[in-house]
Amino acid sequence: MRNTRKLTVNLASAVQALGEHVPADLTLRELVLAYDKGACGGESLRLRKWLEALGDLSAWAITT
Image (cartoon, rainbow, N blue to C red; front, side):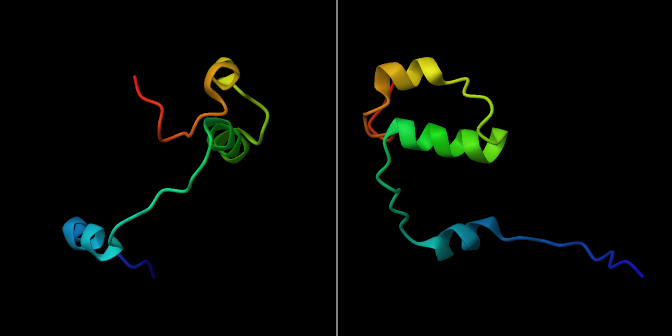
């Protein structure tokens, strides 16, 4: 028999419970390669042009 109870989540308390999050210190290259491997199995690197231009900068320092 399936459990059909409705699940409710209090998003505000969940976010509060996290506390302060410190992002990992990654270069744009490391972040893009990790994303590509996880999302595309490393097969498709559509952001290659950005890696050539900005790959060695901190991923969190890049702005518009």
